[in-house]
Each structure stands twice: as structure tokens, then as C-alpha cells.
Length: 379
Image (cartoon, rainbow, N blue to C red; front, side, top):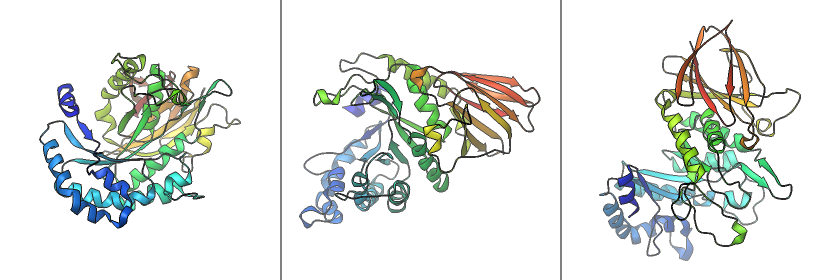
């Protein structure tokens, strides 16, 4: 039914296989219970599962499977074997696993009870890539928080560091990466209401070369109790489009206006630009491999904290994604002034428009609103 509705809307559909009678996700989760290995379970249940997927594959919207969500490292071997089984039968379809964020604890990451200490980058993401050899990298990280004890908004300080991990692995391996964005109010996460809330998440990710934006969630899911504090997603439980839905529509429209250009560039790194060099930024301070300079940029300054994602295309042109990283709830603009080497003007992709900015002695100021991201090409 989901695939039929997706087809009507012109969308693709990733199946989540969770049947109790036997499923790929169930085999991944089995972890040798009852003495049965992954191979034994695939032999035992494979024909029944394949019959289901053969039926799915006849649906035009069927694009593949979301095989596992936030698995610990103990499941990686099983994921690889299930992936091999799936890709042998459906080689043109996607097999996607969504990984945990940096703020998961050692027990969650490792899958080992009471585990203390587990290297997120090397032992979790790195081992996932080595063992599973996925075609696509995916993870979730929800950075927009509300501190109920202080009655104020907050940002997760490790948000950019998480992007950095996946951007670096994507660059090393050539595997594209997607990330999940927060689009539902729950627990201590904010309700998304404005353009700034959505744009901030999309454009910060694009500054790190992300090529896929996923939403958690599109529809407002049912609550298991008051403690979950669920408010609304993009669409409420009755199907009413919420303010965040229209904000998402606006951001998508902006990105589509230049995504063909963006996708022709490869990510090189990120240059943080803070408003006051004597004040730290909790997010940029955690970065391990930031760019300290760029050969095309003579100088850069800003009135509010920002990042500059550096890109290069096949013709050797430089491209830069400017992203305002101030908390979107603060509605703070960032005037980013960049002095370029060897450039007379700059092509600017912003808010769905393409503009040419002349440079004065190689310099221009870009007035980014709260949450905004601009892609620029000096020429």
C-alpha cells in the first residue's frame, strides 16, 4: 500500500522488512540466538523472504530496503551477509543501513553490555565501512535541543564533528552520505516550525558534502506516553500540513535550483569562520580536521559564526558553500566577507536565485540570513 501511494506521488520507496514469520531485519537482529548462524537463517527463511521481495520488485516505486536502523557493531557481520544475499537477487536496488550518531554511548555503539570506551570514528563507522562495504552511508544526528531545566534552546556541540566524520569517510571511499534531520518535536528535541529550523540542518550538511537529506519524521507518529513529549512533524496525525512542511518545501525548492551545479563538485574540507576570534564556538572547537586556510581565499571574516565548505569540480573550479551556523532560534544573520585570490566576480546561488556579484579588489560581503546557505563560485 505504501509503494502504491508513493508511486502516485512520484516518489521511491524503501521497504522496512520486519515480518515476525521471517525477515531480513529479524535475521540481522538474531545474533546467533538458539545456535543458528546468519547463513543458516538465510537458508531456512530465504525463499519465503525472496518471494515477498519478488512481489515488491514489481512495484514501480520499490527502490530497495532500509535494512537496519542504528545497529551496534556486533551486527555488522550479519548485515554484510544479508546485504550479499539481497544484492545477489536485487543488484539494482538500494540496501541502506542507518548508523548511530556521535552521542550514542559505548554500549549502544558496540552492542556489548556495560562496555566502556568505544571509538566512534574508527571502531564504529570505520569498521562498518570495512566489514559491510556499503554503497551509501547514512546516519542521524538531531542537534536542535530544548533545555527544559534552563528553559532555553541549545545545540548539540558534536553536530559538526559528526558531519566531519562522514564527510571524511565519504571523501576517502567515494561513497555518498545522507543524514537524517530532526523534523518532529519529541523528548528534549524542539518542534520544527520555521524555514530557519529546516534550512540550518540542510545547509550545514551540504557544507560537508552531504547529498541526501532524510526526515525524522514526515508524519507525526503516535506517542507511547506523555514522557515522549511528541508534538508535530511535517504533517500532523490527521494529515494536516504543519508550518515545517511549508518550510521544507521552500528549502527543497531552493536546493533544486542549484543541485545540478552542487552535485558536479566534490567536497574538499570546511573552513570555520567565527565572529570573535577570542570567543570559542562549541561546535567548531570539536572539529579535528578543519581547514585553516584555502589557496583561493586571502581572508575571511564574519559578523556571526559560520562555516565555509570548500569544493572543486572536474574542471578545477573552486566552489564554496557558506552556512550560517548560529542557532536558528536566535534569528541572527551572518555577514560573511571574503577576499578572494585571482577572481573578478562570483556566481552566487541563493534562495532559489542565481546572481553575479562583482568583486572590489577581490572582496565581497555575503549577507546570509538565519539558517541560510549560499553556494558560490569565484570566477
